[in-house]
Amino acid sequence: AQTVTQSQPEMSVQEAETVTLSCTYDTSESDYYLFWYKQPPSRQMILVIRQEAYKQQNATENRFSVNFQKAAKSFSLKISDSQLGDAAMYFCAYRSSGAGSYQLTFGKGTKLSVIP
Amino acid sequence: NAGVTQTPKFQVLKTGQSMTLQCAQDMNHEYMSWYRQDPGMGLRLIHYSVGAGITDQGEVPNGYNVSRSTTEDFPLRLLSAAPSQTSVYFCASSYLPGSGGIDTQYFGPGTRLTVL
Image (cartoon, rainbow over all chains, first blue to last red):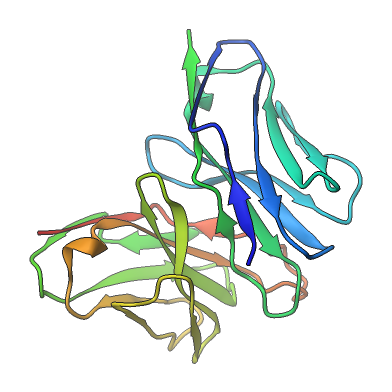
């Protein structure tokens, strides 16, 4: 079974600075998908970014980018120019690309605080 | 589109009571799923469905039933509530991989359930 580990339960960043959230995963598969979800205090789960393992290029979405290291099984999220609205729980998630595999496996989350 | 909707937003039950959490989506997604979120545990899959009439168990199915009579609706039933089922419940939906649509999962706003 796949596992996802987020080793930083809490992190903080100054407004306008850059922060990197860590995620590692364990799998024996060669093709899969990785995701970062944001959960603000409203509780809504919001997709931040998606990475397909067969793509070498790191995914980016505006101020959010990932550093995907397939050999190291690492998938970190970088938030640039942090804003107060970035304060939230961030979850890393894995999904197999195999036939019949639709489930997301989540890490335990990292709580990000943004300091004005 | 309303996306994924869940009712109720909050619910308090007594031990032994039964209830149904409702989930509906208007995106014609084949895949629907239920997760529970507990403090420090991330999200864990309870049950999922890949289409009307087809359901299967996830990681933590005990104490929960599901059915899928239509593409749009995927209710979660608690037959005899227990304090261990106190949690936040999320419904999610997506296209199936390989169906032509983007298979990223979209989440509802969640239901906070307390069992006394």
